[in-house]
Image 1 (cartoon, rainbow, N blue to C red):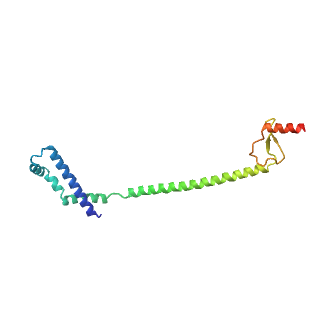
Image 2 (tube, rainbow, N blue to C red; image 1 turned 30 degrees about the horizontal axis):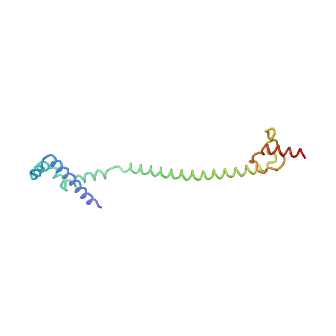
Image 3 (spheres, rainbow, N blue to C red; image 1 turned 90 degrees about the vertical axis):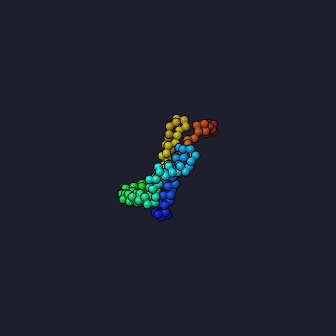
Length: 167
């Protein structure tokens, strides 16, 4: 729609709203015994208002509003748009960088776990829990490859000791 069509449709809509409002007000205030008298009274009372509804008067009002709208300061809008764009770009970059950082952290964790597990399996002076005293004793054997396995159960170790003593 071009400007003239918009103005025409607004004018028609505003005219119908105003006229229907005025008629409703007058009709509800008086009984409808003589509808012609009500229309004559409305014409006398609201003649100036109806003249203001003429298209040339409406167009002059709209042209003043159009001039005021054309003279507004667009720098505020530009500043606001720039700020919104900066905020949006900053948020997107923050999300991308956070995703990349979390991926790198996961990779470092995996590498550290691999290093720790390899270090434990090659360390010959690793500590093994002594079942009787509850202390750890250094051992020189490679019976336990994984340093993260729990120590043997006391009952199993005692039964093994008793079996060797009976032999």
